[in-house]
Image 1 (cartoon, protein in one colour):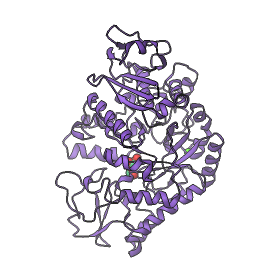
Image 2 (cartoon, helix red, strand yellow):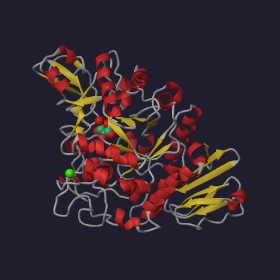
Image 3 (cartoon, protein in one colour):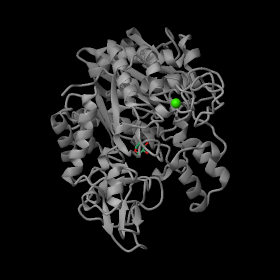
Image 4 (cartoon, helix red, strand yellow):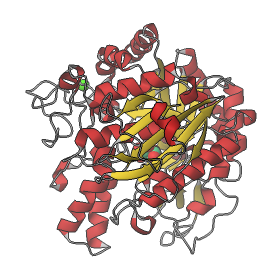
Length: 555
Ligand code: GLC
Ligand code: CA
């Protein structure tokens, strides 16, 4: 198995990246037109979220045909050209495989609905009374996870939207179909794959009610998931390609198994625990300030645990399902640049492979939308209703929650310029989702010309990983455990040591360093306050970090 320790991946949400033909929707040719920008940033792979044929109820995560390009995004020729042009620049494409479910418009599901037993066995249909779903499980987008089909007198399972029917992986024919999808894209020159919610594919033998939760404990990291992944990877011969699984509500032990090279499953795993530290009682729709103590604890557990188990983490703050990190853990008003840079440093110098989500490298912020009409996301729109009708929230409270939690915060158009439509589409066009007024200065054009910009800083971070093997391959250990305001860790390789300290607050903070003398004599690789800025070491082997300052010193 190949390792991807010195690589950096850039995630594109095509609908919001760049519109090449003036219909207000980003497209494949738009991506191709920006390859030089990505080459300049220094990334090795592009993971694009799905652009396959889809009714777009969940923006392409409801796939109706895995081998056909959704016309609104372009054509197969456009995809071939994108792969070719990226390859010329040394950039590989990773495609997003949504294999837990298909759209109910998929031919397989349509045949199932028409009564074909072969295709009914592709999904999870259960007989039952029209008034009582087979179990009390809840969909991740709200409401029951089951939908009744009167003509069949059966229910089908959908862990996500009602238009996303779960596939039956127990059926070997389903697994063969999905392998063929991989083979098809591999033959077309795709260099890697991201597998959507792939730890949910193996369902239990018996379906029963969950009296303690929403049902997830019965299908998360399910009984055959490791076998299924191994088989998929082995039979399609993608062991040496870069692969990442999106693991929903997963465990450390399972992530070790998914990503330990000896198991022949995946190169790395996304887990999300560190992005729930501001969920009150674990509930995404209840606001709470971030719990930094918990964040430190989680990074320590996962970084050290994965290291001990020979697993590999995907490192990330953002994706198309998450709010913008500078608005969430930083301060997008008073310390916009400092906090964005600090957050970038913290993640990029850890053990794992970093992902940059489009616009993160510019310090793009949350949308700060004020009306439900501005939101497009199916989850946000469902919860707008649920929060008011079922949870008794006022409209103001509900809008406040969406401002912080909506997935649309990460889906506003990529800001290429400071103009009206941010250079995402022509100025006369109405983009499919609004460009927020909030932070127009977070744009590629202005930042490319500014050596102090967040973009310039991200480029430097990416470069450091390639220049210093200690970042790619060093071990990790955490220190200064009792100081909740500072994330402090040490990377080590041979005689070398790299200390990374990040002040996660808006106050100046004293932070301990293991050896004051050595630290003072070390070489600063990067500092969020700029070059030559690193603080002096005090007598007691502490340094003072300024608000949201991060620093990395090589000893
Ligand atoms: C993943 C995707 C998300 C999608 C869901 C269902 O979580 O990232 O966007 O809605 O899977 O496919
Ligand atoms: Ca377009």
